[in-house]
Image (tube, rainbow, N blue to C red; front, side, top):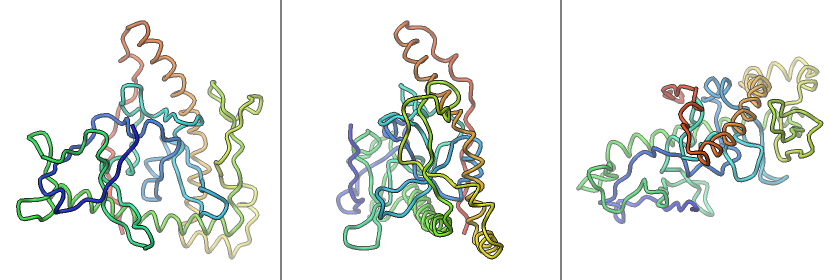
Length: 273
């Protein structure tokens, strides 16, 4: 089911309610997820990082790699559970998202109405979006504050990524799709296109003044975070096998729980200033 985001309105949604998702079907087809620098310490031990852009004229953005196969997020189980110890902030704010207003540089709070987490009429299982006097509810205020902080950090992250690109450090990432643990195995026959990485050789050859500038801004930390995260590609490979095993267990109607050997953490942090 495609997502259907609409602007949140105190008039149209005065009696509406929402709830946090228990399943992540809305993310099940996402190959990558936008992430920000405030998340790096959590992402480094869980997901590979890369840079992508929509076209050659669009700026690079930082993403977490969730698959090497179109239409499949291997961090979402077939029953919708999240497979992993960290859920990107982009998903934890669901069903809400800050979205660009056409022809302006402003954003508006929007809500997805397609996945059952939003009701036009709140019930005892959902939180109100607005109070009876039309003011945003406390739960909506907290979610909007999270999204605004994410957007602020996203803009900062874009600047740091652009600094890396301007220094000539971002290059195409020659990753190959494989069904074993080594997703960099050049012997496989299906290259994955669109991902970019930091060129470590170029990084080490930077002049001192450029290194100083990138270090001062924080872009150097981002560069090394991306490089260090590449070993997490093995996690992606293991989750491909987990999906395969899951389908096998479903077909044989055997116990699935034994496949899940990871514990979720609290996934709680703030974006800072």
